[in-house]
Image: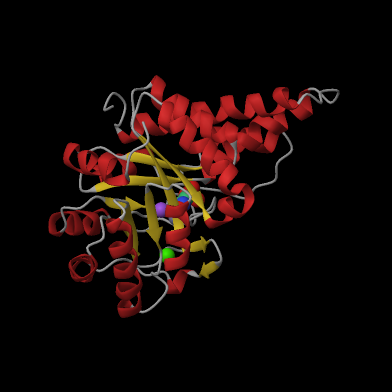
Length: 305
Ligand SMILES: O=C(COP(=O)(O)O)NO
Ligand SMILES: [Ca+2]
Ligand code: NA
Ligand SMILES: [Zn+2]
């Protein structure tokens, strides 16, 4: 069933498990996410960035809403990295049940002001809101945040921010970053910082940049003709630990991008004569389902629906 972000994340925070928020851009990605969540009796969040809305629009949002509404587990449709009040309201008009307003690259006061506006409007319509405090490294959609500017979330500031805005869940910068290159080798996750913020805030916390970039998928990507440098993602045990101290929503996009491309590359390489799209996109869906299953198990949301 299609529900709000709070319907999924408040129980997750209380139950000390993480709920994956997977980015989608088409039908097959959406099917892999929701069907795997149903198979494992897991709640799940399907999210669309502004780029995905540009790419698939209301057509894609309607595919997500339709599959979600018929699903046997709770599913929320979430706007990822909404860049403005207008963008958040547009998503709500499209039927999203959760929206992120990401004003973390602005000053603290501007972030508070923008977030407050979205919270008031969204709550008037029964929609949950995510905001962000602190800056991740890597590329945040259009904003490139280089390492020295990437700053981690201050626990006291987080309390002030949540009190001032009434936001439902808070994305915090704890060492993760977007994309396949999350720093040299295993990214350092500031667990002490998560524990401190989790002690001070009862609301669900959000970890962005949480793809694991599994070595096996990276190898298959290379073996099927893909080119990628020494990619690294967050370690499973770091993610598991974070969910014990308040992280309840865990954003994953890169892993599905890699998995779907592996599925497609392997078919095209093995069967040069193939041109039935179902034979190309079907395997993409299967590889994504494997990656999704692994993530749901790592986060502990299996059987929670
Ligand atoms: O934070 C993410 C995705 O992060 P990854 O690049 O690690 O999948 N989306 O908002
Ligand atoms: Ca941000
Ligand atoms: Na988000
Ligand atoms: Zn993100």
